[in-house]
Image 1: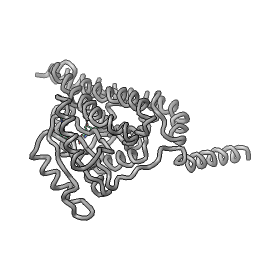
Image 2: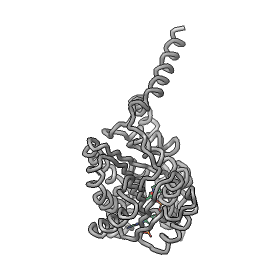
Image 3: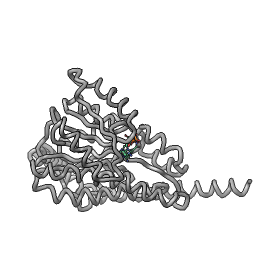
Image 4: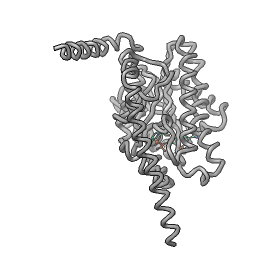
Length: 331
Ligand SMILES: NC(=O)c1ccc[n+]([C@@H]2O[C@H](COP(=O)([O-])OP(=O)(O)OC[C@H]3O[C@@H](n4cnc5c(N)ncnc54)[C@H](OP(=O)(O)O)[C@@H]3O)[C@@H](O)[C@H]2O)c1
């Protein structure tokens, strides 16, 4: 009898939290007619984000380096506009990782046609996996420049405007490799972890200005970037990352956009993603009561699960090493 009362009270408690949670969360924002700038919008997750944004009636600027790919993407994305308005998508060709002045100039130009940037989605990025000793030293700098400095430059270019208007949403697209370090991702993981430090510090600075930041941790996603990364991925890295499955860019983009509109700090995809976000929440901002309760309830038990995962991953790495050693011996 007591068991049932306790169970029913627990379920009622969770239900009340679930229902009350939206009241305590940041307000939803509208995408319709907003200016959404997506870096890395010519391919993969960024392109899917741009398509979803135009479908919601936003004016979208996509930013990347290669002009031909930008034009091709502009054509594809425009075909998804609600009213067939081909003027709803504009392109900006700039290398986000190098010169801040250039980035600032090109963003100002984008704002002169579509108005102030209300949503900045930092999705430009790349991954060069490999064993630590095999990766050229320059790769570590390159990862920081593309995955981290690009986001710094783009965010610096919009932050003053957002602060003066007391509005805005900023997204940093990190990775599950920005939540845990994996063999083969020494240069990539570090650059994606860096985004977390930036995101947590910046969110505290911009909260009084009504600006919300979303830090997204996509799992493996079937994109041109992922295909490229597969070419140099060590065997053990492939085997480990396969454990959380391969997602479509549409699914990942939809989750990121929903979480952005809701003003959630963390955005994760799938069951493993949800577990990782609860497990690694640390001192990150909490954006709803329901989320805070989940973190408190599950963090400890997920740590136990993570130890089993880590043992499994270590076993994979060891088996791959033994196989390589045996192959060398037999040569
Ligand atoms: N796919 C996955 O499995 C996965 C998983 C977790 C996280 N992510 C992250 O999600 C983001 C998108 O990944 P994706 O797989 O969709 O990538 P993708 O298909 O390779 O697209 C990358 C985009 O970023 C642009 N870009 C790269 N460097 C740039 C630079 N210096 N300046 C301006 N634009 C630049 C690219 O265009 P240009 O080359 O023409 O500049 C392209 O538009 C990345 O940050 C990635 O790390 C991906």
